[in-house]
Length: 201
Image (cartoon, rainbow, N blue to C red; front, side, top):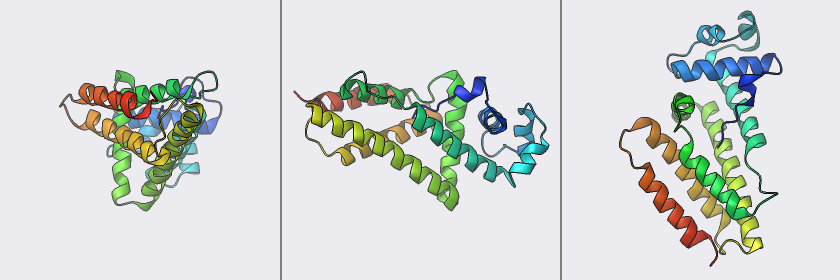
């Protein structure tokens, strides 16, 4: 859920530099107004490299999404030094914060635009299906561990993880598509669910 951004400050190689340029341009222009030329405007190296590596805007964006999924896998919080309950709270925090700051708001809007491409494009649908499955697997593993630790009730880890994942997508959608400020109330109710239905007495 955390859209890891360590590559933004110090890209290690040409691909990371391309990914950084794509991240910045996507946040500025959104999907519909994004072009390889505009990505090139944010790229510190020769623009010809973009055309050498990618045949189209969508080709580049799909590689960008794969890159971001790898970043997500590497930067999701771990709970080696704390209990699963603390880890779940970290996940709740990220669920309701994503897209809620000035720096990430445009990016969250752009990611939602990319997600909607899955309605008509199998490649985008395949990516977001795998991304959703990864998030659910991670949350389910945390819940399963919490049950084993005696921290969580004996809930169904897969069903509970599905609720977390859909809450994340719904929260992002609400934040970037509506001015109806319901997220504070939604978070309060979701945290009540965690306290009363997930945490063991």
